[in-house]
Length: 404
Ligand SMILES: Cc1ncc(COP(=O)(O)O)c(C=O)c1O
Image (cartoon, rainbow, N blue to C red):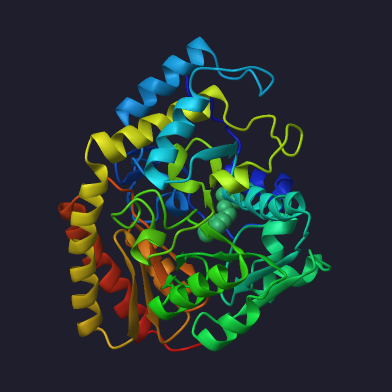
């Protein structure tokens, strides 16, 4: 039985939900693959997948069966006891990432928190505590206090100051500044291999080389925040690979549970060796339901060829976006990889997002002028062919509208 209220969900939200989101005035009740449906049966093509989360699309039969089976069997026991799925998931993530140990939590921000804490824990265990963290202009790492402290945008930070001290921001375009910022008191450098919320900006190769050199020179640990760009989103397991980076710690989330909340922090042996029972924890972290969903996702990604599918459809999407940009001068840059793309446009992107939604296409914007696409990994070329003309029409009508 679907439990729906007769009350208007938008009015109820306005009355009772903390107003921290600018939600679009649309209510979805079901989904199938890359399609989302409203109560009235209106179909929308979803090219944002709940901000990179619905990796297997909506209503995935295998995931639904596994979740139902797990719900009937056992959902949660806490981390007071062992269960059969958490260590299995940790082992699979270790194989995929090359980082042998996992801590499970419930979100990307929590994964970042765990990375920041254990970077400090490592230096504390060495007997030479280090607190400084180097982060990057345009970074976004989450909304909890630690993750917010390494998030660049003043707009997110200012209302909550003072944040964690000792954070130094540098431009990813300035290799000399990167080299100067990483010093012998730097505990860690935290980087998104492709910045997501900051405007879909792949880390330049020169910045990656400067980071790797700085970490080698000073011993500073490298934290890769792969929450948005990792886990197959770009057609490879992690985008740090593409940059030749070898992180000591990695933050994961979003796609991992395919819609069931789960985050993970991955650690190298030497960082993990500093961890002692009681150092960190989470009541829900890595429970049976979340681990079961993540195991289904990883099975699809690796054994069932989904990562190759992302690489193929990602290349197809890239060709379509570049062709669109060549016809539409308002698009000043096309950035991304695989199924993670940003179109920089020469005006506020909100009108494009609204225009797309009016055409039953779901996308969003990051920073003010970037239109972002994060489709489900299961998207087909036919669906890309359906979506791109809608996107082009939305851009064309935003361009024709008088600037406000
Ligand atoms: C790179 C990156 N790190 C961390 C986060 C925070 O994840 P969550 O919203 O699951 O806490 C996000 C969310 O957008 C992200 O893109």
